[in-house]
Image (cartoon, rainbow, N blue to C red; front, side, top):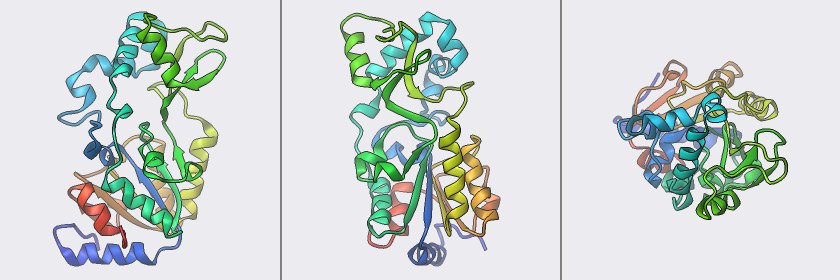
Length: 257
């Protein structure tokens, strides 16, 4: 039976499920980071809702073929809230799961690095959409800390080229139209098949193939707990559907958090 957070017994049941689990996989989306001051993309206050041009910069075809899009993207990178954001109670609750030895893996659609900043072992974090903290050359794949490229932008380079080959540089994130790294998404799906509880947090579960982690876990016999501020595309798979503030629900869901 699907429970909602407005009914305390259902939250208690989900909490007991989490407490008894031995191999939890957590899948996180943008909703877990909004309490840290990082807006989502499509919500009422989302990045693309307020600035449609920013969505254009997230399309690899536009980014590669339109220098003006890249110039605007570099200016936006200078002021992204990811640089100063701090982990919130939701992130810390997942760290507590790891401290207890019950976190099998953490699959995130986020690019903000807040899970690692909160204290999760980077080896357990699977960043299916990459990270904003590094840059990568489109041609030769030279990878460097993003801070180096941003320093060049501040020094007057509007669209810094690769220092190795002169190619186009972008953040080491997955843009629309860009293929995922096969080894990364394969690992995300594999760990989902190995868990006894799938905890999906702050994601609409509508972006594939990452969203496939939920039905993969369910098909392999895992219990599914979905925590989100609104309905998701995978609600039908939930054994417990907890709708409300992630910053309130997730710490209440994790014993000891």
